[in-house]
Length: 137
Image 1: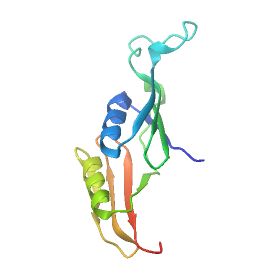
Image 2 (image 1 turned 90 degrees about the vertical axis):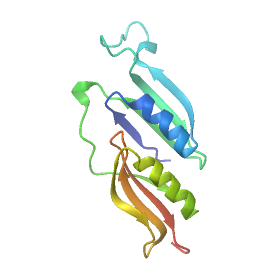
Image 3 (image 1 turned 60 degrees about the horizontal axis):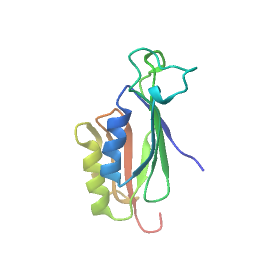
Image 4 (image 1 turned 60 degrees about the vertical axis):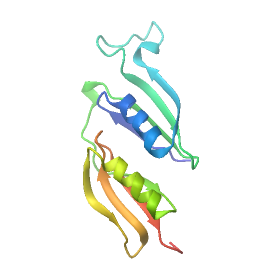
């Protein structure tokens, strides 16, 4: 099983709450840095950041994430989270919700391989591809 693990710059909790709403996911875990054992204390000022989060999506896939410490934060590049939706109307609805407040890199539309496909970067900086495959693809 392959599960993406995302690193945010102190927006993990907001992102997961948004994804739960938009994607119909269930947040299974949301551990704060302050939940760590006393022998592994959170860095000062980082107590409320997310040390680990886990979300189950209706299709059985899992998304995991945390807030990266500032010294480990990097610009995200070279990947997209790919979301496959059978119904193009539902795919477009989810695409529009993910793109809201972010940027569209390829508008959602019919292609030669899909009933609907679009690419965006959400308001949390995560790149997404929403794909509604054509029959036989």
